[in-house]
Structures are given as structure tokens and as C-alpha cells.
Length: 162
Image 1 (cartoon, rainbow, N blue to C red):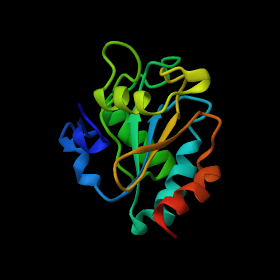
Image 2 (cartoon, one colour):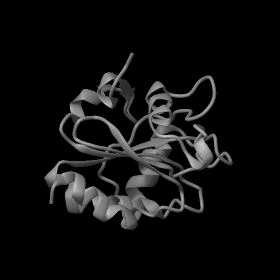
Image 3 (cartoon, rainbow, N blue to C red):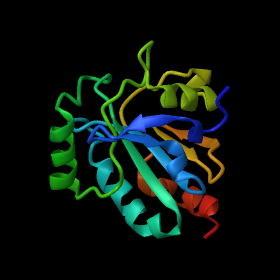
């Protein structure tokens, strides 16, 4: 059985296979994102956190998903251009995935099993749900869409030890 996020492989936005073990010893904020959602402006807060703490071992990992209100219809190239042109995103963006259901990305199946959501459910409810992972690859907290990135700073700092 897989025990940490490091046991998974995912594809980046350019189709390259990335081992999550590349992020060992880092604090991760794994987010399912969408380009045409009311929460899309959270990209700014995510980028701000990334810029402020990446040198301390913090990574934001964005996974586009079209399962919630069909708000991520574009191709990988469209998504990449949108994030760069509108929010100057420099953190890693991954290939579009499914978060819920039988075709869910295995990494997200793991994340959802590790920390249940509202009222003990596993399913992610909407875009910009977030999973905070410590330096040992363990999921320590799950946040919903209404948990804005700037409000997570103290918990991120605590995990970074700064």
C-alpha cells in the first residue's frame, strides 16, 4: 500500500512524467484548479505564497480539473497560457485530471483517503480544494474552496519551521 505522496507519479502540463518523490523534504500545497471559476483569482494568492516561501522548501502543485461546472474546458496549452498570461504563475502545473470518480488521478484518491472532507466525505466538492502535505509526504490538512491561500500562511510557515 502506498504510504505517502512520494509513492505516486503524475504528468506535468507538458506531458512529462514526474515522480512526486522529486518533492521530498518540501511542504506541498496540492490544489485542483480551473480557469473559469469564481475562485480562479486564488491563483494570485497561490503565486504570492509560492514566491514568498519557495526558497524555504514550499511548493504549490496545481492540477487542472474540468469536473466541477466544466470550468476547465481548454487544452493543456490553453491552461498553461491562461495561468502565465493572467496570473504570472511560476509554480508547477500538471496535466488535466479527474479528481473524483472511477477515473480519478491516483494521487487524488490517496489525498482524499488520507484526510476526509466535510462531514467525513472523501469526494472533493469544488475547484480550488487544497491539500497541505508536510516534509515527510504526509497529508496534514484539507481545505475547501473558501479557504483562501492567504489564510493558510501561518500553517505553511509552521510546517516550514519558519
